Each structure stands twice: as structure tokens, then as C-alpha cells.
Length: 303
Image 1 (cartoon, rainbow, N blue to C red):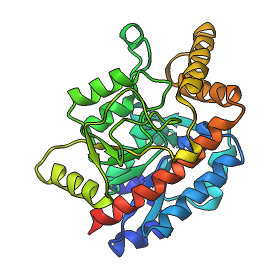
Image 2: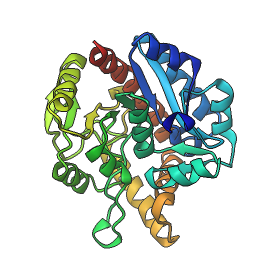
Image 3: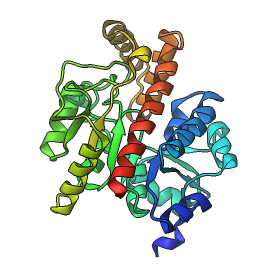
Image 4: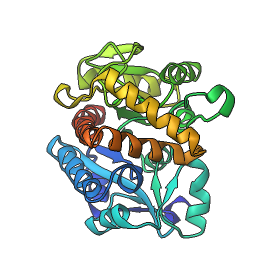
């Protein structure tokens, strides 16, 4: 029985009853993506931005073997500081739930939980993708497969620039996942507003995005939509600068034999160190901007 596994916060439950727009948020960004206290501060600020734009935030996590849809301040604080929180993707959910453990949900796991809870829009920083040298390592994020099959629209600042963006787009194309640029023709690459790659379609309003998402699902085309929303200009990093930094970080990961789910947290930590903290400021700015755009899309979708 599904209801044995899911617990809603009072705020989310009331929003569901009142038929209000709800926006899902992941928790890996809190537990594994940012240092304390910026992680918990950002989580609360992002929730507030969603409320200001007419929707209700639902931060998702696994706590004591329950899928929590919407978290209390104490639970956010726990995720931000505890060392006893696993990084949870699709494959990890059954084990963590059955063993009554704690897990911070990745993009893939958040999409699954959002769909179980009937939430259609999810805001994150950047999606996972095909890692560089994946042709030999086969290191491909479960996020992409989830986008292929789960009916949740994901608002992000494009794919993380530590990935092979070209191959990530190829994978999404194979699985029929539309990559939509919000007010942009080029795919943003997380810290930068542009990359050498084009999006499939450009849209300029939240209503246009909502219309497209609703159409996709009404005609029975399962799977998500990537809404790529560039980082605000004032907070973007220089493309050449970040490319060099990432090359250095990747080299170090290889030297230290870091692989699998440890790669992303290692690289993001390294990038933060090499950019002297500028990447963390950029990360916070882009998540907030995504929350603003995502809540407007959710409100239009609810109409």
C-alpha cells in the first residue's frame, strides 16, 4: 500500500485539498550539494520564493523509512547537518525504505516521489547526465532514464558542466525527452548561460511551457520535459574559466580513482575550491532563479 510509505507535510496536504500548484524540490542539494549553513539557508529561501510566486514547495526526502513530501524546519536542519544520510536514486529507494533509513533524493528519486504524490513540476540546480569518457566507463546518470519514463517536468540550469553535454543531449533525444530553452536558444551549462549546444525548442513564457507539458501528457507521451533556464547574467561564470577548472577537477578525480555516485560531489567540491567559492554563489543564484520560473510554470499548469 502506497500510503504506508508516504507522509505529507500539513502545508502540502492543504495545498492538495485546495488544488493549489505544488513544486517539488530535491534534498541531495542540501545533504551532498552545498556546505552548512548555506545548504539549509538556500533550501528555506528557495521554498519562500516558490510561495511568493503562488505555489507551495514540497522538499522531498527519505526520513526514517518514509517518503516525506514537504519537510519541517527541523527535518531540513537534520538533512543539512547529519552524516547519516544516503544519496538516494531509483535503485536505493526500496532498500532505504525497507531498512527505515534516511536518504536525500537525487533528481531521479525526486521525480519518482513527485509522481507518486501527484506533483508535476520539480525544480533543481542541474540534471545529471552522461559522464565524460562514458563510452568506456558506462557512467550515465539514472536521471536520464527517469526523464525518459516519469511524468514530471524538470526546471534546471541545464546539465552540469562536469558532464559530456553533447552525449547527454543525444541520450535524451533517443528517449524522446524534449529539451526546452526558457528565453534561450542555447543549452545553459549550469555555471554558464551558454554551451556549444542548442536546445530543441525555445519558449519565452511560463504559459507556453505549461501548454506544451500538458499537451505531451494528454496525448499519452510518457516521460519528463527538461526546461533549461539559464543562470542570471550577474551570477554566471566565464565559460573558458570554468572549462579549465573542470578539466583540473576531472584529472584529480581520475588520479584518486573516484567513480560512481561519488564523482559529482567530489567534482562540485573541487570546483568550489578552485573557483574560490564563486561556484557556490553561482549555484545558489541559479537554484533560486529556477524556483521562480518553476513556480510560475506550476501555477499555469494547475490552471
